[in-house]
Image (cartoon, rainbow, N blue to C red; front, side, top):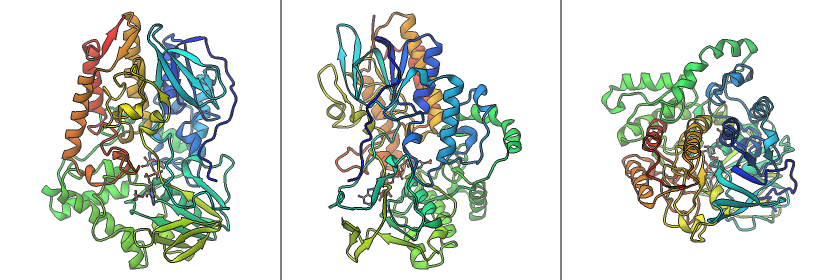
Length: 547
Ligand code: N01
């Protein structure tokens, strides 16, 4: 039986009988809001299913889990925090990110207003009193005038429908629900199913000391070099000088990073010029080769092909067996470069030169079923001690649709979004008054560095709530016409890119039956901020507001 729920009964904090705002989710987004709403004098409380702060970093503690964003901008920009916390690595592992969350919690005294171990199950709108009643595991119903769901993109792990999935007698875990006490892989026979960011990280780590690692790949990951660096306290002191500039840059860059696309088209450059640019990005490491590449990479097939070929040559140079290299980086790109999230790797490609690592191409050798001892493919049964399901998430919408929120017409989100997501500004859906989302569907979310989104969108939400309070507005609801406009803006832009050609979680294409569409706002953080500000400048009159 693969654990897919982690309900633990219990509560640790009492909650006001009637709140102004109930926040759901203790990740970067929820914690930022808790701090700022509290500072603004709201009666606010936060509720989370996990046993501590961290959100996605609470659940994703699988071996090798590590941030793919450099530490300088993977943290809050409040000086009272970044001036005090020393990082050990340029791309910190999950344990360090957790330490950071505990530090933030302590510095900002957040936990006193958080109830942990309590998963929200349903919520009902009370029109007469203009408030939500929220029902959670192990708790009295909570009443709040506003609810803000900050559920992250990966609140709902996805397990594929594989025959016999519950029959395996060894340890089988989804990466997003890894045992909190850890799982030693040393000397074990490990299967890793999936080669997204999680799969690449687990496989790379397992290959260090497992007896045997078998990587089941359906599509190759176009993984990029991380160029990890260890950081001394002196490095931290030196690098701090650049932090204000880095924080400042985030709101001006597409993905909330401190760099942006090169304002040049690869197709207009000579091969020498182009390759020189690619080489510089490659050597810089991190996401530069993705979100700092030539601006036409995600629009032009030709440009995309150049980037792919450059990447492919680099991979082939590292993998000894040409047949294996060809599976990891095929001559014909299985999907356009940059249209699925690349992982950052450190020694991923070298593991395939090791005797203890095997790559199974699931297109040639599909998994037929799980057995008591392992995995059966067309080539026979393979025995394992541990199976890591790195099979992704019902991303972006999964957290919200898992909660039984009911609209004014008694409909669930699944029903309301059956024909595609409808939101206004990515923060609210018609029929669900006073329910807002942070890092939610049709916001920059999956295309944005998490802490950047938490802060920029968080500030916009605080401003919105202050406006409502200052103007005695007790009800806000998204408008269907505005939703259609938002949807059109997203869909039209999406079609101009190469993203629709990839079957990715960005488009919900990884979940059978899920409507395929852009789950995020793909026009970038700066455009998102300016659209939100347009609404603010006109008193949010594009929403239905009432006193
Ligand atoms: O999930 P994924 P993830 N049979 O959906 C395969 C963030 N993240 O957890 O590509 C066989 O990307 C699937 O194959 P295919 C990051 O934003 C961040 O890895 O659909 N295989 C794919 O290979 C990331 O993008 C960090 O053909 C199946 C894999 O499983 C997001 O989380 C670390 C299958 C799923 O890849 C999600 O990453 C980790 C099936 N039935 C994650 N179903 C850091 O920055 C799915 N697959 C630290």
